[in-house]
Image 1: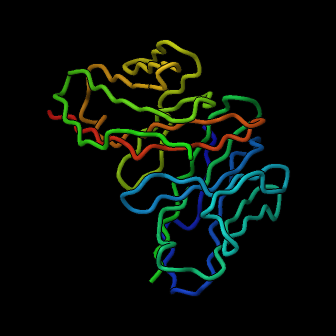
Image 2: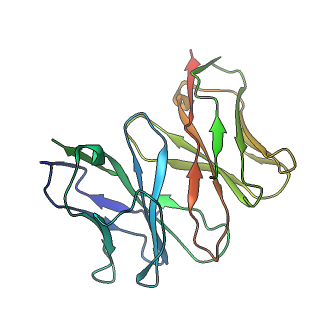
Length: 114
Length: 113
């Protein structure tokens, strides 16, 4: 079964550094998402992306965050200047066309900011 | 703000019994409802989706939806130790296929052998 893949599985970075989290969505999917989950808390929506542009973003997704689909397969989340509170699991997800097409999540990248 | 509420648990159920998980949501515009299972340190895994009022069964799992009461539940029959996980309720207000999920905090389920 096709799956969403994320790299790296664990990223450790120092506060103030830039990080790029990478995702390869399922190949025929059209919608791409980033969610995050701070340890012990709920899964939170960050951003959705369709047709090479952001379709919706949450309050969390401020100017420090950006997303890109640099080629036909990768989908990236960049955090320009990481803060301690950015430490979380970041999940990429994708979905196909039409109502009720379920989201498929990747295995996540655990980001630790020290 | 759209809210999805779940009892955080932990909910302990003997092996072989029925586990009942509940969820309420605040946004009457919500149209799609999902139950995800999440093992510790892993990503959410979709186990059930339901879109219309009533019951939907899939193997040992039954999802129940009552839009008038803004309530969705998940029953797990013949509970197994491998069902021990956190169960996340999630809802979507459909927006032209852009499916932004709003998650609850999850209910931690422990199946006791």
